[in-house]
Image (cartoon, rainbow over all chains, first blue to last red):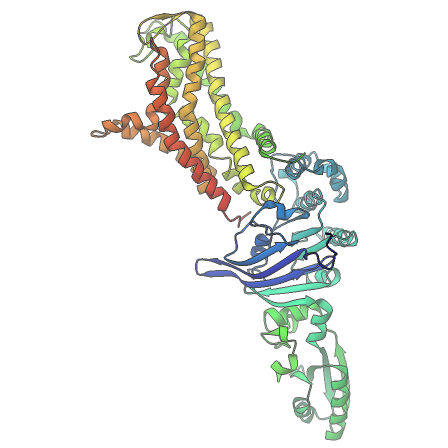
Length: 331
Length: 273
């Protein structure tokens, strides 16, 4: 009996994943679902548990609790679960005393199923054909990253798990990596990538999970996250003291504060319209009312640090941002 | 073609060809007999030592490999063996490549088996290389002549050559155990130097136990004793008892070491690299 795409298990399904090292809890109950075709960003500060959970997804680390399923198969039970899956955690590693090509020949042999026949193609895609006969020990960090991608491509993956693929690359290398990831996604490969480069994730990914202290604090569409964060506004009136009181009293206005002599708050369009009317009625005439678009970076910092980072302000979403109820926490 | 143990084995041998330690070990195995023969050449007027085949060193080149394996058991062959066995898992940790090979299409058990076979192959190659170089260099120095057995009978040169190679094969029994110990330490310590030195230390420890007063009863069951089992072949008739004992005593040390190494490798978390 054939299984329709809608019924087939998702590329990545993680439930209640926990990893403890003695008293230290590295991952404290992670739930993630990556669906076919997603370009999925996995974000979090250093030490948040990203790499540990990626290692568990690839079967490199045994979870203390919870389950990982890749296309419905458990990578801890058999390496067969990794069929159609490729990627690397932290920096990709190779045998430094062998050439890039020789390393790929080894990995191709370990993959079987004609993987070795794709070496030239993979080297060409990552633009390493010219240096393929040099020893990997002499490769730069960027070249190793690209060789890591080439090694992943040998497997003809349907799912790629990439741990900070652009880390350590120069601007041109980052651009190339971005182009490569986009090309992979265009070919229908589901991509899950962890990254510190939030602008890049915002540009490449349709979904994100944000992990903080081993726990997922947000998982979903980036667009939804930004909507949940609400639009931030700046306000200046003829009577800011009175305006501040009005803002605090007005329903559906969140995260009200004063910043550099101006009032800032978050609200949706309807709430802003109601606020405008209330301000006029209160005698605080509007001089400036400008919307400020939230970036993924703003949201990331608000979710992981309780601030919006660059401006060092208070959280728009508090410590439980899944609720996406900024007004509740700020007021 | 689906990958399997044979794939890992072939690639492990390929990797060994790229590594200096392989040539260090095989080079030592080849050069020691030559140095030994040169020493015999310049000291041939002096009286031979008080050990098996000492008096025959200047009369038959076939005595040379036997004397070398007699003394090589102390530390040389355990060290040569440990150079690869102690490194074969630890080097993956050093290079951070376990995560690379564990995420391909081979089960951990297949990778373990391929690596263990490669380490054993290297050890076999080292012993046979040493023996062959010793036969050639010894024959050039002292001639391809008949040999007196440990029972005092004279063995013709072709028969003695056969016995030399069978002795080398028997010698591989305790060497196999050293391989297993090296694999275990490589797997547990994840550190090549610690595993190589540790394997050598364990070999030396067995010899020290053998000379401790009051522990004489343990001597037949020590690993170090099994390195002399081949001498049973050089008796008339052949004394199989030490060879049979070497087989089960070495299995007693080797199989648990190998099983423990396997379990550690199978269950370990790959958190580094």
